[in-house]
Amino acid sequence: MKLSVRIAAAALLATSVSVVGTGSALASGGGAETHRGSCSGSTDWKIKAKPDDGRIEVESEIDSNQSGQTWHWVLTHDGDVAARGTSMTRGASGSFEVGRRTDDHAGSDSFRFRAVNGATDEVCVARMTL
Image (cartoon, rainbow, N blue to C red):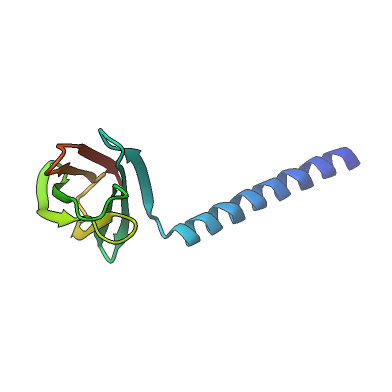
C-alpha cells in the first residue's frame, strides 16, 4: 500500500513540475519565436514573430559586422509582399533591423525575409511559420 501511495505522489509531483515549467516558459517568451541562420557569405540573419493585439509583429535583422553596406530587402507574409525597402548597416555591429505588424491570417502564418547586399550580391533568406 505504501508503495502505491509513493508512486501516486511522485506522479503528481512530476505533473505539477511540468505544468509550472511550461507556464514559466510561455510567460517569459510572450509567444515569440525566433529563428537564426547564415547568409550566402559571412553575414547572419535573425527573424522573430509574435502575436500582438490580434496582429503579428515580425522583426528581421541582418548582421554583417560591417557598417555602411546597402541591402535591398523584401518581407512576405503567406506569399504576398508585406513590405520592401532598402536599409544600410550601421554602428559598430554593422547591422540593421526591419519591423512590421501584419494581419493575423487564419491558421499558420508564414514569413520570408530576403535581403541582398547591393555591392557583393550576398543573399540572406530567413523563413519562419507562426
